[in-house]
Amino acid sequence: KYTKGYFMPPVSSLKWTQKENITEAPIWCSVDLRDGNQALVVPMNLEEKIEFFQLLVKLGFKEIEVGFPAASETEFTFLRTLIEQDMIPDDVTIQVLTQSREHIIRKTFESLKGAKKAVVHLYNSTSVAQREQVFRKSKEEIVEIAVSGAKLLKQCAQETEGNFQFQYSPESFTGTEVDFALEICNAVLDVWQPTEDNKVIINLPSTVQMSMPHVYASQIEYVSDNLKYRDSVIVSLHPHNDRGTGVADAELGILAGGQRVEGTLLGNGERTGNVDIITLALNMYSHGVDPGLNFENLPEIVAAYEKLTKMKVSERHPYAGELVFTAFSGSHQDAIAKGMKWREEAEREHWSVPYLPIDPLDIGRQYEGDIIRINSQSGKGGVAYLLQQKFGLDLPAKMREHLGYAVKNVSDRMNKEISTDEIHQIFMEEYVNI
Ligand code: KIV
Ligand code: ZN
Image (cartoon, rainbow, N blue to C red; front, side):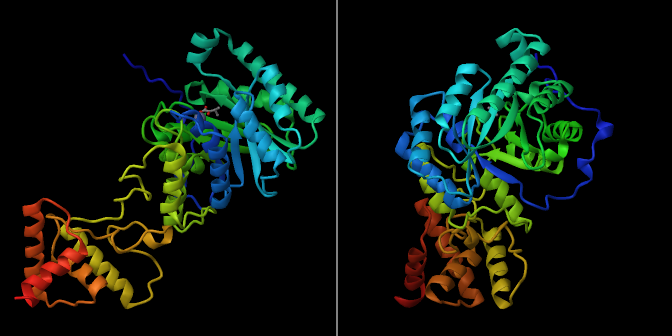
């Protein structure tokens, strides 16, 4: 029933497999207010969009796609509010999305009046499926849609005051023959004639993920290596997450030549979402690469995200989930407790505590209550660690073992988690109040 469904460039051309790691952060562009917002059950209202925008600015985003201003009244008003109330910091560039249709492009520029600078993001769909089923147009006709839109963007930018940068996305890139995607991007570049002082962004979306991540990376490398005006082009990635591999797409895509990543906080976005920038950035951080974004208070970001999107972050969400730094099982707790002690004994340059990929404190998580929690799966090491941390009690080996079993039995019998205060109470009953 299913065919291969993707287009792989000739394997002999691939170089990205030779690279070991990402060495520098890409340019980040948040699409929370556009791709993220358009996928919500109830899209954000004006006040919520403003609050989300301010959060993104606070986190250090310098490029923010604020919406599709020609698409709805709220989107238009939101952009007008940002501009008229001077809410866009000088070092932040807003981005707006537009289809390649005359009245939409004109309305988009109308919404931008008074903006000091902006990226205008033009897209049209290029995949075989969309060409055949949705547009019923030939490849030539699809190129013409992109080229005529590109020309009009150029004209409107000349007629409107402000500093405009252009971006083009062959939407449904991953379902498009790579050589045709390259052809259409080059045709748009020929219209825009980018220079080193006025670069164009070519954004290559996995609108729907159709392959394993190495295929996306290979498509990126092929287009990136064969684009015209290459030094004046920024290659941007826009992974979605249909196969659960948005982060892998972005990571391999960066190795393959991607210089910029569009994504969202915690992976909100159409269907299974856009790539989660927090996971991607913290993966880099864990390898010693400064992501250039500030996630030092992740619990606060999660709370704001849940309030504004009205969605829940899963307990297992990388870095952000409530349980992702928590060990319940005895052997994990024992190793963590020993690792923490080893760390306390000397200044250690690198973080290497077993079972904890990064230091939870770096992103605003706490040791107490976050890393060791006790239930019937737990062991003496975890129980002793908590008593030591909260009550300064250093138990001798035999007592640890005995207390460990006592606590485990209580948890098993009551089928519940046992807090540190309850452990202390059991300790008192076993050894003090007898
Ligand atoms: O996923 C996608 O293809 C998009 C485009 C508009 C860039 O969101
Ligand atoms: Zn998208």
